[in-house]
Picture (tube, rainbow, N blue to C red):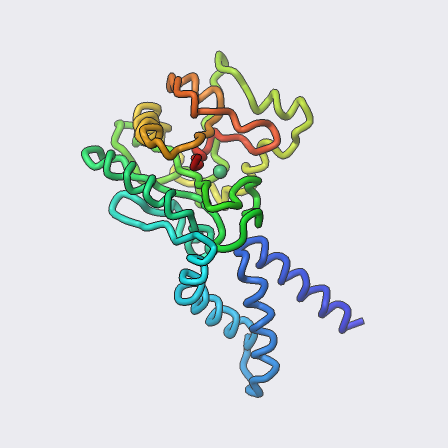
Length: 266
Ligand SMILES: [Zn+2]
């Protein structure tokens, strides 16, 4: 019985780490083998080995292997930063080199403004079609989520977000605006607002969604010829008066996009 429980718990950990980080599951298996061969008593031995190997792999080995799969880490700069460093730690910050170019070109366009690009989930380092949970389409290096721009009540641009993860705090439709979420839920797409469970905690309640600065950011992205589509919730598209054909509705099978912007290459 004990052996079965042991196998079940290890399988569970393997699957969980694979879903969250792609490489974590395999590194966990390697850690189990190393721990078996290393005859030394150590409290939390497997955990220590796993964390050490995970960091070595993530920061020293994976970036070069990812190149074989046509992906590289997002190049951070003064203007390009992750909303949450977990994105980097969990290896969710890999993109096709063309997407890095698009980001840096857009950052250049923003040089004269106080607006920064804060990115959320992009793609894993390896293998096309390997999905990055919970996103359906972030599986080819060509997709990335971008945070909205918020300001203080006085209108000063902030680099902060309204949730720890950067997801799940929605800029809800006003009473006179079209409510896509209601529509999708009514049609039975119960997952449509599931990102509300992924906030990891709501913060910075005082921040106000900035239509003006988020629109500037979106328009700078739209200037890129390489940009294929940009997803945002229909009521925000209307509210910001975005008329470019590349600005689309992602469909009810995905999740709502009134907490972030999704962009993808052609
Ligand atoms: Zn996305």
